[in-house]
Image (cartoon, rainbow over all chains, first blue to last red; front, top):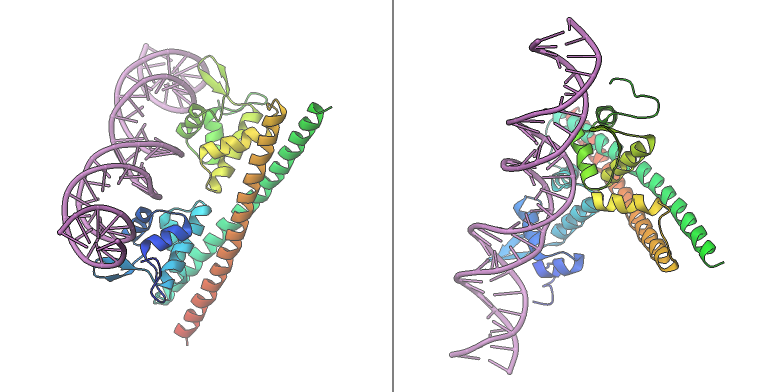
Amino acid sequence: MSTASADSYSISELAQEFGITTRTIRFYEDKGLLSPERRGQTRIYKPEDRVRLKLILRGKRLGFSLDESREIIDMYDPAHGNVDQLNRLLDRIDAKRQQLRQQQRDIEKMLAQLDDATARAQAALKDQTD
Amino acid sequence: MSTASADSYSISELAQEFGITTRTIRFYEDKGLLSPERRGQTRIYKPEDRVRLKLILRGKRLGFSLDESREIIDMYDPAHGNVDQLNRLLDRIDAKRQQLRQQQRDIEKMLAQLDDATARAQAALKDQTD
DNA sequence: GTTTACGTTTACGTTAACGTAAACTATCCT
DNA sequence: AGGATAGTTTACGTTAACGTAAACGTAAAC
C-alpha cells in the first residue's frame, strides 16, 4: 500500500509525512482527536483527517496539550447551538487569542536575547583569534 | 519575612509574584536551573535568580522543557572557552532562532484560524437573533 | 511557652504523551 | 505454501514536571 487510493492515506503514510510514529496517530485517535474511517480493521485517513493532524502538530510546536489542541480545533467546527453557547465560544476564542499574543511577545524577547548571545559569542571569538 | 531585605527575595515572595508554588521553585533548583544563596538553611534569592526564574517561565509559556530553557539561559552566559565551543554555541543559537521563527509562523496561522472561527460564530449568532 | 507562620528535607503519587513489546490478522510476493 | 510487509489490539513501561504529605527546625507573636 505505497500509493494512496485516490484521496486517502494509510496510517504509515501520514506517519512518514509528518515524522511521527503510527503509535502516536493511534494515540491521538484514542484521545478523540481523530476518527478515521475503516476498511475492515484498517484505518483510512481522508484529507480532513490529515488537516486535523496538521493542526494538532502545530499546537504541539506551540506547547499546547492535546486537550488544548482539541479545543482549538473544535472552535472551528459548526456544532454550537444556542446563543449562550455561542457567546461562551466567542469568549474562549478571545482567551486563546490573548494567549497567542502573549506568546508572540515572549518570542520577541527571546529572539532579542538570542541576538545578544550571538553578539557576545562573536565578540569572544574575535578575542580568541587575535 | 514579608519584606525583602535590600535586594533579595524569599522563596514565597517569588512564588507569589509569579503565581507558582514553592515546590516548583525548589524543583527548578533540583534540576540545576537555580542556585540561590543560603542563610543557614534558608534560601535567599538575588535579582539574578529572579531573572533566571522569569526566563524559565517564559520558556514554559512557549512550551519549552526545562532542559531547553536551561540551554537557552546558558547561551547567554560567558562560560564558553575555545573556538570550537563558541562555534557550536553559535550554531545552537541559530537553531533556536529557527525554531522560534517557526513558532511565529504557527501563531500567525492559528490567529488567522481564530479570526475565521470568530466570524463563523458571529454569523451563527446573527442567524439566531433574527 | 505554645501557637502560628515560614522554612527545610525526603519520599511517594500523579498526569500527559507517548515507547515498546507481544500476539495476532490480512495480503502480497515468489 | 511460506515468508515478508503492513496492519491491528492489548498492555505494561517511561519521562517530565510537578503535587501532596509527613516530619521536622526556627523565629516572631500572643
